[in-house]
Length: 138
Length: 487
Image (cartoon, rainbow over all chains, first blue to last red; front, side):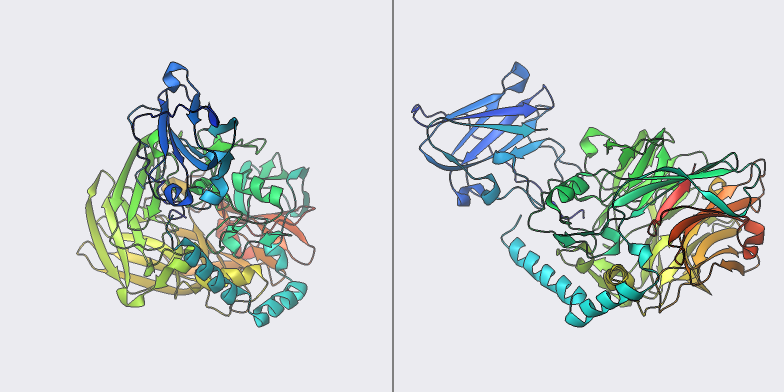
């Protein structure tokens, strides 16, 4: 059973970048179990990107400063989100000695994987107009 | 995970289905399930068992015997939308057999795991396991999500810990048996595996392993469960490790030639029997885990070992239940669940002897034996007795008898409850005020197949062949359990 969970994909994050069009605004609200550090959010705009490519957008939610929301202005379409809570603020997703995550992580739709990160078919959602999701990350 | 996951999953599923559900096997399973008298041993329990008194049906409670026998074992395998495919993958039912003031009571509750909640909601067994492939609907974010918490139970620091071998301990209340949650021994060690067979020193210190291929975490905990040390060590091979042993000074890790070679599901399908490699025993100094020695032995398989000890000249001894191979794990425990007899050889009680000069050997006894236990006050120290089940036969799984083997005389004395019974592991309970190793009782349950109920027995260690000195009968039948402890 120690083999069942692949190391969660290491999420690489660029500096926050926001488009200015507000036609299709996605608001992600995070429910967290800790009040320190930051939530690292990566947003993908295709299955190929989600399953192993680069995020279309990425941002940090400064939990330590009281923030719990991430807002993206986007072209309408299908998206998937991967996020983890960097509780200790060391800039990475900590893992135990066998490579399993020890910091909370979550996916859009609050999807859970099946022996690995949640796949695109579970995490995929549509952004069209003002769209909101609450993601539990604890 | 990888692009090949679907392929792997489909391959493993087809393999498992072919192994378990060929038309003849499926037919045999149906036929046997309808006729075998031992099907209660792997039957489903539908819900928690409220506390109840037991009826004394034989003898009387020995004066001074007071305490609780906590035991754990799988008790829910089947749901309408899909069932577990292996005996080791059912939901853990934690049972408390209590003897107090001459009376006996029973209570049992399922470990309230994320697995059980998810499966109850869907109406199907979903989670992957030792011999079960994952249902595509399973939601698994960590190994603990798949844990049946079904293998053993220890009392640690005022809590019960229901143990499995690939995930974290699950804390429960010892009185209400209510589940509290998984234990993270340190925040950075969340989701690490913790075997169901910790070795407990006489002063309560806990040693355990958590295994991942050719790596093992060596856990050292104080008696109250506080983490004292956690260190990852390298193993010479990726053996299947269900149990290990320890002397007062050394960890003794038996590395059988059933070795993880493939990343497939279920877990058991990833192991290969490689007898040409022999069995290795890794001995590690408890005070310096870099100090190690490897012994080479002839090939044998095993699940369970007893507490090891060291003689004055440094010779290490440990009792162990040796299998010819690991066919039971790979195949047999599927069959047991489906009511099919194994046709395999039962395990044999044996002694591993590791000489200070570096030579090792396996001394066989010719005695059928499983579930070895001994005096917890002598854990890691020289001792004379092993308690174990016996009487298992090729045409019928599970044991009908219990025994005491005396390593000094080489004699085994046993009591056979008869073919109408399935015996569980029995534990060693010291008599109050006694310090001699022989001053003890055996306490453990059986299933009375004819009456269709579970029973609790007490036998005197020195007169085990005379049978129980006291037997209580429950008004329910609980399936066979794996392991437990007297508190």
